[in-house]
Length: 514
Image (cartoon, rainbow, N blue to C red; front, side, top):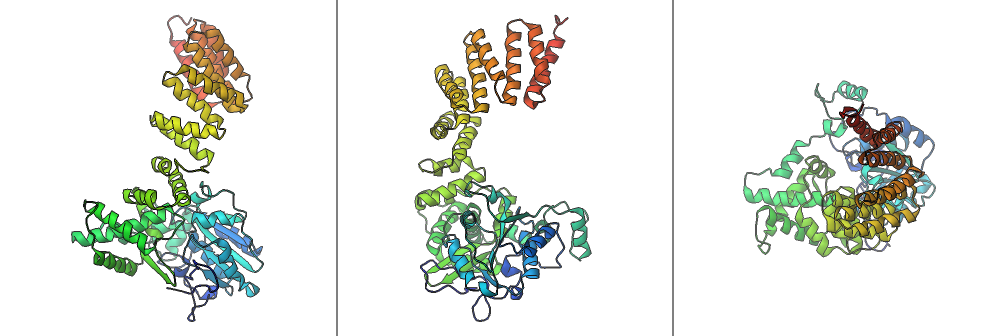
């Protein structure tokens, strides 16, 4: 539905997804579940455990309600049923997703109907709007109802916790599965899925479409290229809409890659247009047409299936982002890549940018370190250290020690000790102790281990007991070593207990242990 756009506002204007016969915002009771983002089929609703919490929030007139869960867990249906039950006569404002439109503009639109009650419906909300919710001012008479994937709530693009009431939709309980069967939903007797969408939503057509549903090679590639573009765009959640120009460029690159064509090879425009018509007919693509504001977006089912298949985001997407996005959009996309665990692409996009969160820098370094990429790890540890990260100081010390650069390691360990961070200072003391031991200075090593033992961090203190035991054992002081291991074993710190226990068994098995 092309919908209704606001007038008298600067572009881009939000475009209504649901409208009445005159193109105006409808009553909530008059809107279909599909217009609220609920995937078909729309059978009898079965009560969920979250309904109790939602009942209380609506009774308390909560202005902001956020329902979250994994993909296809039933968040949209659960919130839609609660909203239609409690706010049927409220005017609904449900817009096509457009991350360029500020949340304040959407709230202002809803405010026009606040006198008689208005609902701003944000389904499967992206990171841009989600981040703005933390500081949003919601006027009296307006309810903001949000569904979102749980992963985004803890993502790096969300700077602050949301102030509203959050309700999590969990896995289906045994009672809920039984209730679905009693409501005449077709649920297999040996159903293993724990999400309502995986049981009820027919995903096979989407899976077939993504892998190619035509025997004719050319048509199959046309359709796959389009759907893969839509899927990757939705999964990476850039702060932009997919315009016709962007779609044309990305489609061409995806199409050439699928067919193993040269980068300069021509791509059929009619083939792309036919693929668009096909995807719209299947409900996998939505075209938004409003004056000066035309764009496309794909069904969330595409992302759900692709992630379920663990299909990586395609190379043409990353190349397009690197070459066409501005710094802010590259940063947002890089942070999404980070949240998805794609650290190589995250660091590629974030490397030359400012305002990268400290934790992101540190984790990228740590992952590269664990993967054996020394130069990359060193570079990102140094970025984190520039922001004052004591853990990065210690880990860079560990890296340099492993590389045989004892003095560099010593410098970073000492910097961590001087940082005053209790846990990292103690960990650095242990690192200095190991360095001294390796350089033939057992007394200095013992002093550093003892300092770590006396620290405020119980984990590192327990580990220091093990270090002192190992040092004593290497010097032939078996009983002293045994004493330290026994003390470590009594700390209940898992790592220290495991190592101490193993070392005690070795001492007990030694021929001269008597």
